[in-house]
Image (tube, rainbow, N blue to C red; front, side, top):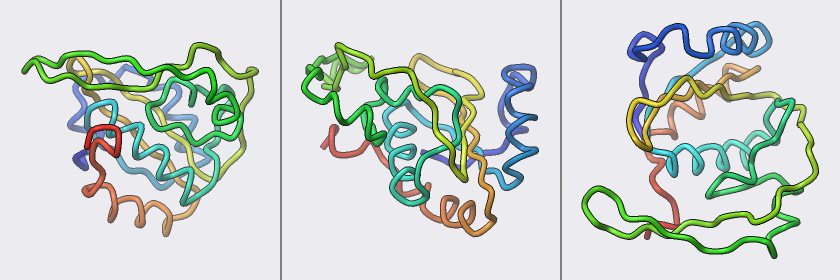
Length: 151
C-alpha cells in the first residue's frame, strides 16, 4: 500500500459527491493506492484502532479481513476460494456464502473507494474526525501489506 493524493487519482468525477459529503463530517483525509487485499487489511486495522467506520451500509462481508461483529458472527458461512494472478501464483481468500442482515455503523472515520485503476488495484480515501487518528493512519499505512492470508 502506498500513500498517494487525490490529485494523483485520474478520474476526478468518480464518487465526487460521496467524497464531498465525507469531507464535511470528517475533515482529515488520507489517500492510499493499493490492491484489494491491502485495502481490506487497512480497513480491518482501522476498525481495531478507531472502532467502526461511519457507513449507511456495511459491506464488510466482502472483505478478506472482516472486522464487523455482525459479519464475524456468520463465519460458519465462509468458504475458501482461490484465484491465479497474472504471474500464475495462486491466492486463497475467504468468501461469504451468506450475507449478514443489512446494517450500518456510526463511527469517527469513513472511507470512499475513489476508483479502480487496474484489475485489483485502485485508490481509496480515508476520512477522520480527529487529526491525530489521521496522522496515526498515515504513519502506519506504508507498513500495511497483504496480511496473513498471503503469507
